[in-house]
Length: 427
Image (cartoon, rainbow, N blue to C red; front, side):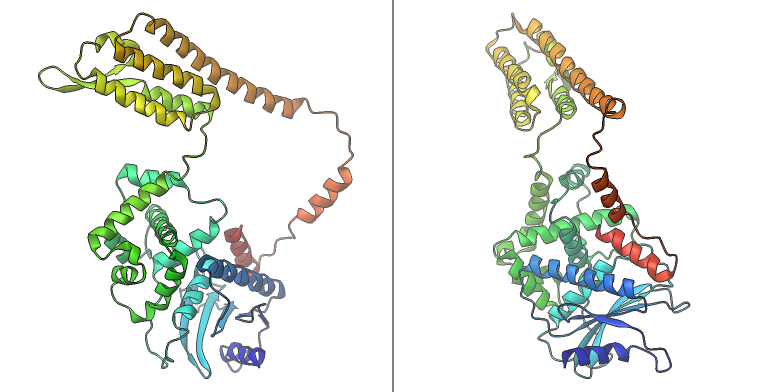
């Protein structure tokens, strides 16, 4: 009965005089893919189930769908400028969610995954609502939720890119929480859209990280039909956020700061360690009656040993060295430890052996960086020029693997071009 009902839904989208397009039903029976090309229809059916599986896994929900989702892949020249859209309305036997993709339109920047997530969110939000009359308005999913979930599913294996959030914090471009919720990504340039996507992803990730965050995010989605202030909706569904706008703003800022430091467990390369270490070997303090701030190199310690602020400045430098040692390349850890010993000697006023020790450390640092570069160059040279002796034992395997990995001949029809773009987005 369900298959007959879904088939009827797909037929309802076809003009009376048009040829009956082919369709496929997904493994969960929720998606009906309407498309004339067999390979495109099958690939889209598989992709829909992959997106749905990630969506349910992210929110820790069972698969208890109530309303089907129809995906129309049509080639309709001159049908309008909107290449893809999601709509929902009441059909004869309940709500119906439809994703329309016009393959004849300009599909640049169109992400099928976003439209599928919008359809899944709509179905979950209105699953237990009263039926809608034809033409009645409904609340579409917020853009930050759709785009944030898409990024979450894309990066669930690799994790967040902490450098993006460090850039936000360093450039002071983090929008206020209220302004971010009110923003619409439509019409943004590429830079603004990248910033918006980073904030959307961080919000979704932070909400999921709260106590019972994933089930509460599902509850927030179910509350979307009620509308209202988005910040108030989040506070109602996430008690851990507190009850005030100021508390929400503070949570937002601290959450972004925490994400910016999420990769600190990863070690630095020798070159990265050298760059950070070189930037720390300076002492800043104010001098003169004008309290002008001056920066001294550690090698010039004789110039600031008489300054009363030297102890506080050296302490700050030593704290930074301790923090760097946690991430430093193992080759540099003895070097950093020696710089910490020198800092303690300067605090005690023991400066007799400091100059030769500093010179020895500078020479050793230069040697490390040079040797690491030489090793990398040698390995690259050896791989490129010296690996001539091959056993040929695996030639048959490599031949078969290359044949299996070779892409099929590219087709230039509209459906094939669109499916190639979908594949690029999922890889």
